Image (cartoon, rainbow, N blue to C red; front, side):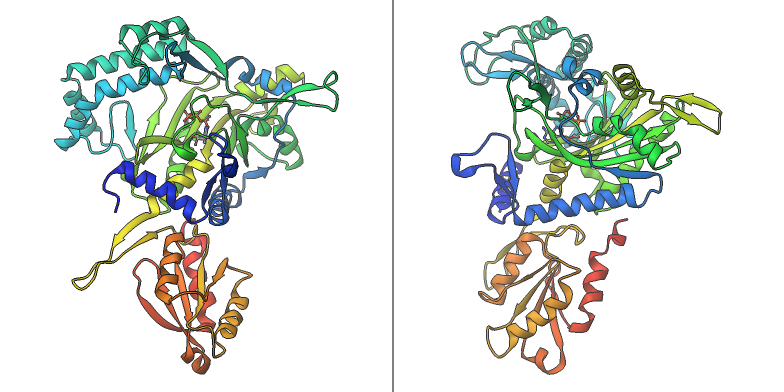
Length: 523
Ligand code: ATP
């Protein structure tokens, strides 16, 4: 049993490997850092998360359509978007350990350590249950928040941490790299490996991967692997608007790979160098961005909560340092075993991207709004969720080591309490034994259902062991075919969560499974 959050996280990672959810990339060559492959169950779960998102965003919104843009884009795209000049992290090296760190993260860790005692005290006293300074709970309670702030600011270290946070944000806003270094020295931040403060200057490190396009080196052009999917949507804005006769407000949604040469890759699939995003850009009339921003903030949180996750596990985090393109930004954060981390960003991107592309391409990217008889460059609200982080969230939230011991004997199981809509395998079909025509009957039942549902057939080992294997991958139903089935066409259904069994007619299976795994349950 996991008795600490650290252990829980480790156990989930090994579970991901043992049951075919996530493998390290090129593992037989000792792996490639921060790159992962999804196994047989992982690929199914990932596809189901994508389907949930696509249905919620595209299928259920008449004014949102999909797109599948290429990963390679014209190099000018990344100049226009600001990524060539500005998509960089401030890095600092320790001269004794030769290790490289993100300067802002070293400082943020210091802020957290200064604030942690007061926050822990607040938690112990029941003043703060799951949120800290600077963060907005998904269900805010203003009075409680004020009481929390009053309590926290009585602590001197907390005040220092808060002050430091302000200084760091200031440096980041003004691209003040020497300022960041000065803070690292002033707050006596040491390298955890060498234990020294022998630091280099802070330098910017661009996160985009580049490669060459064209057969011959001389004629080749540098192209980038896209660091976000959003730009594929912006450069196609006019194509989609015109060919789809879209009227503002409307959205374009896309799921696809993105690549970032993250300097410090950590926490499993939280920070990868190749990952997948599900992004939607919603084009609106200038001046209406605030109300649409609020709409999408709430709509996206609702999407997360519909899966049955406790609201206490989620919170909004408002950005104080806004990206160059944004006029408002909130993250939806989930409480992972190692703390709250961003899963999704909701950004009000103004008309920055379309205006930039208009400028760099020389093509007009405007909309004629018949309602107000005006041409304008639309404003954009973006919702951007990391599929891999959503995947990890789903695994962690579903993973349970359940003690099933009775007075007579010790017993336990690992069960993935995945929402049935997301479960990789919807039902497993077992013949009780390998003889007497039971396998044939089980296969006959399976053949009728497998076009509609992803099923698994298993005849090896005892039924108990087969149940455990299916529990571990989150299969909601196990269906057992026994001798009675041959007589009256009934089977036993065993439910994953309650472990209860019932006898039903095999002809009703389609309806029973269909009801439980229907997308209607979450949409
Ligand atoms: P972070 O601050 O954690 O680096 P970000 O603010 O740079 O994230 P965005 O550019 O807003 O992230 O990207 C949108 C979403 O893409 C994030 O909410 C996250 O879920 C996901 N994401 C970003 N970078 C990575 C990565 N390296 N690996 C996996 N997912 C990522």
